Image (cartoon, rainbow, N blue to C red; front, side, top):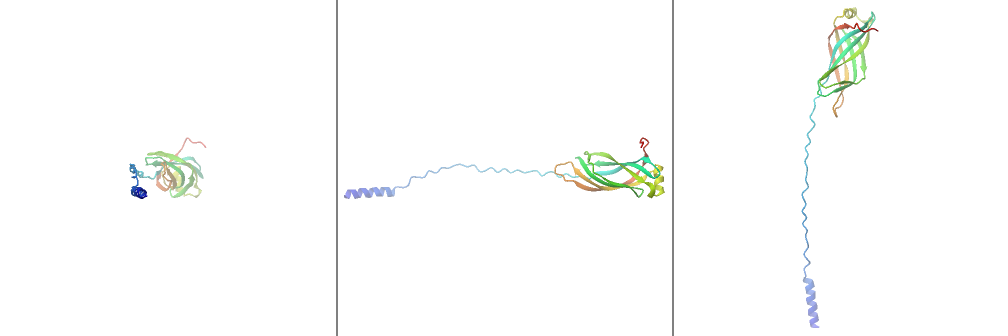
Length: 184
């Protein structure tokens, strides 16, 4: 029996002293994440210049002693490198210090880049409440001092450019011309 006890002791000792099998360590190479840095160029700031308003001419279409029909040609110059749309326009026209006409236009007027465009305003003026000197100047086709002012809503033809309102005010001398070709 002694040999059995020795055998069992050795067996127990053998199993007790046995170290665990070595762990298999797998080394997985992981590439570090690639961080892509993207520098966005800020959109260049574009300077938007206001259009320039001028009276090109004032023309008599039909003249009577009491009521005279006029045509005023307004020239709009776009100094920008992109087109502009005028979506609304309010105006008041004075001649020799007297109100001749006022009104508003809702027609969209497209003004190409770096160019000018003209538009016509036709209105009637009643001479009853005017000074005689103004009637004499118009009949004699003399120059009249004018003032043309108002507001315009302008939309730059650029992506993400908001519309803006400008006040315009132009004054000067204009020839009064008789239009001989208009029969009313």
